[in-house]
Length: 311
Image 1 (cartoon, rainbow, N blue to C red):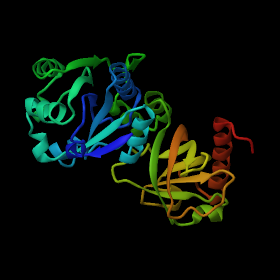
Image 2: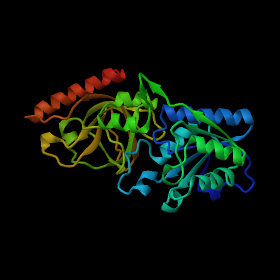
Image 3: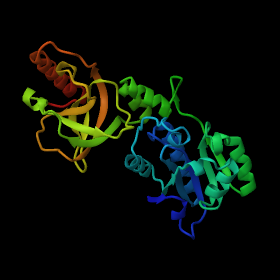
Image 4: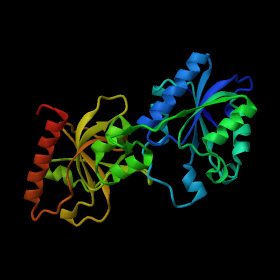
């Protein structure tokens, strides 16, 4: 997959293409349907498939301070999009000036002049242009003017629940990671760099890796979770992950940390990730350290059972 930063990265001799547009945070099942259909249409027409997305998130530019929690960081989003068979990922820098483009200018400047769109695939709730004033019907009218067709992909639902990035963020925020996984099509992932913590876990017999995460990362609700610890070029490792302030020790700073089962290597400085499979319990304050250690032991055993890991 080719990766372009800005429209100027498009080759001068770029031919016609099939394009889809969106933020695609999470690359959830709804996004996968839209992108997959784009790839299918492109292959049937013998054209390249192009996914257009934005950086930073448009909300932060249009309404500073309103940046939503990030479900997938840029590199991970690109990986997931590439796995769907896309030919080109085009990331457009979203600026105040760009946000003021009229729907007509957006279509002309992006889809027609640079990407030479023959067909455009969007979701049924797609909006574009200044103040999100453009909709699918306007896109279809502009397509007739500029010579491209439009497909409108329906929203993906299950049990009357629409799978959207907003819905998934609400699941993650509530600690309902299994519901988030159902909408994503995979476990929710949080990435970070392993940093030094209090080293208290090692003294308790359960060393943990502490993650320094992106300020906008979608961190699940405080609690303990069974999941997978992801290192580059390594098989996933089972982890009992804790999110919270360590209330038994009167902690203040909210942390993401994980005890990796049957593992004791040095991870400091590595960029890693935790995938959350199931919530085990809420954060609790224990009267004694011994009581906390006993509970951690139970958490580890429950993690083994959920992930089907032999002791």
